[in-house]
Length: 155
Image (cartoon, rainbow, N blue to C red; front, side, top):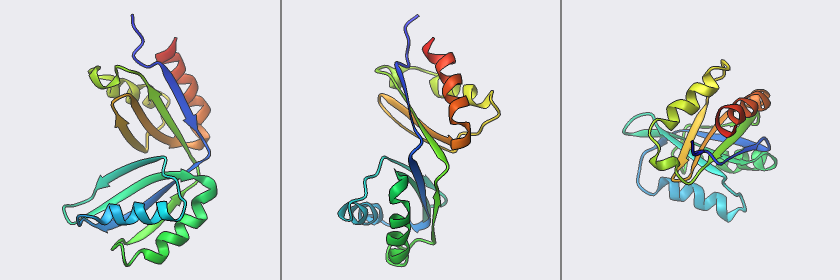
């Protein structure tokens, strides 16, 4: 049987930033991410989620070493970007499962979720693209999740 997942990557040196209750107005995300980019912050992944038609929370991953700077930058602009608060989680593990056929394989997301759930661990955030399926779990569970995914998908 052909392997759909060809590689599993993990990063434990990232932090998750959440900006809560951003007013859902066109251009708002451009303002936030242009501002961060202009200050030298590299964004590894963006995981947005809507809380209503008028407001949304946005989560994104940055280097752990940039976390304090990002909190300071966003906190200073929170009124301008029309957000409610900025939160940081430094205790995450960011997994990326890669494969050329991920986007055309039915049921794969369910299998990945089930694999992690069998450990009694909750996936916190998810983002996908054509050839990568990425998610976060608590950093303390990184090795256990890595071993399980390797067993279930790369053997």
